[in-house]
Image (cartoon, rainbow, N blue to C red; front, side, top):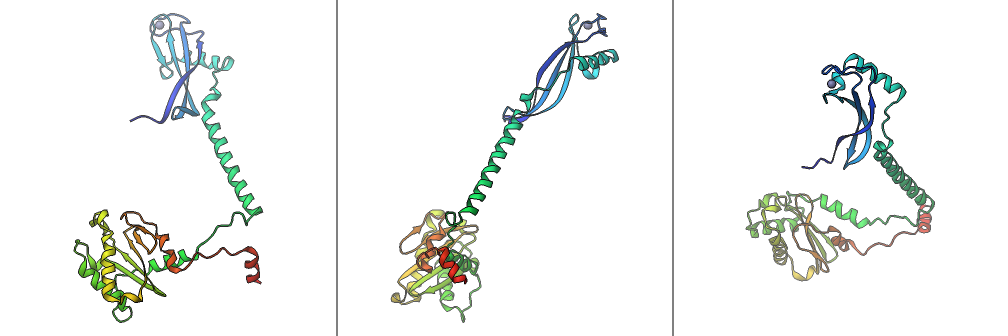
Length: 278
Ligand SMILES: [Zn+2]
């Protein structure tokens, strides 16, 4: 596992410690103190400087001391050095921070510019809403496992027939159904929560079952077009219409069902909208 972020240190200054004595070899003024600056990095890009550390080394006995091991006179000497010759954190350790600020600043500027342009020219940026999609979503919400024989005999017969024909180990009581007429078109929606029990490549056979059942239930000439979809647990997995189909069994585009509700409506012009509102 690579480390993509964390802290790194870099040496920023080397100074002599005056008026000191090595506690080990007792040599006078033998210390060089190296000052390191730690910084936070992300993908090795320095983001922000953190803190400084100091390590002193005796040039005579080569023994090194972390700041916590400094004698009081070493600490005093370091304080003196910090006054006359301070070790500053280098600016580059914060350059990632500056880049990030510039980046987000630019993004923000662009989004403000977009909002401004839309407010100046709303026609050009008009979002085309398709009311047919609202109808489809409303119908999909009506998918139900409990179908009444008295009030919805077509769906009831379909459910009975499909439950009889399916032999794939699916719990047929758990399948949701919805049917709807529009002229001579019929919309058939099924919701199969445990669709994963059927291999994806065999799922499209559900349509064969539905079509066979509908042939039995209804005289052939009363329906000229079928619009069928199977919903899985999370998304539409199958769609079949007279002109289009998604039969892969995993992800299907439910918008292909929209022609069931009619031709694509023309976007309403702003002037027309105004006259309607008046
Ligand atoms: Zn020494």
